[in-house]
Amino acid sequence: MDNNHYPLFVQLSIRLMHAIRLEHDALHFSASHFITFGTPEKVEALHGHNFRIRAMLAGPQNQRNYVADFLIAFDCLKKVCEMLSHKVLLPRDHPYINFRITGDVIDISLPPLRWSFPKDDTITLPIRNTTTESLAEYTATLFRELLEEEKAFEFPSNQYRITIELEESPGMWAVYSEEN
Image 1 (cartoon, rainbow, N blue to C red):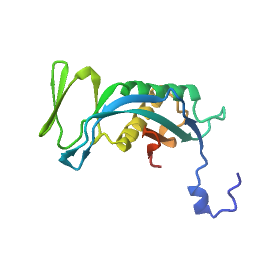
Image 2 (tube, rainbow, N blue to C red):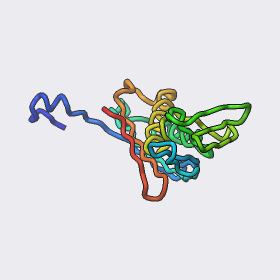
Image 3 (cartoon, rainbow, N blue to C red):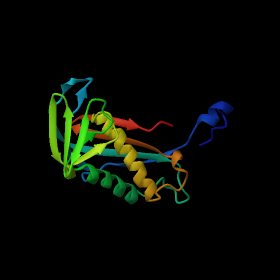
Image 4 (cartoon, rainbow, N blue to C red):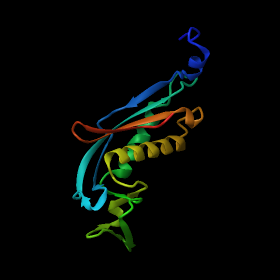
């Protein structure tokens, strides 16, 4: 593409990128969560979803003319699903929730509410609330970490952008896109 007919400042801001998109029946996880609505008194009941996940990885093409190996990217996203599947998702950074671990049990309190779960059936996430929007952002972070571990990026990783779409119920998607 010839950008020479654009002014220089426009040419400098144009970033030509390609992308791969991952969408497959195997990219899903079942998990339970609850969310709070601003105050400790407004809390959803613990419930579950069959989440579906889609991802887009945008970045420069390498010498072999692809952004990243589809199989490596797919395997990384599948690992994200496996890490979250069949877990109770808990928001570690919530301002009102208290956690106490005793042996193999995790107790959570959000007065006047209390829950106890087997520790192995939970995952405590570095988020403030387990909304689908926050889960989409968390899965993008996890996906990026796994891609970096697998050396999926041939250029500096800051040249790649991840977008995650997370469906909690049919037709209800949260989307998170990393900033440029």
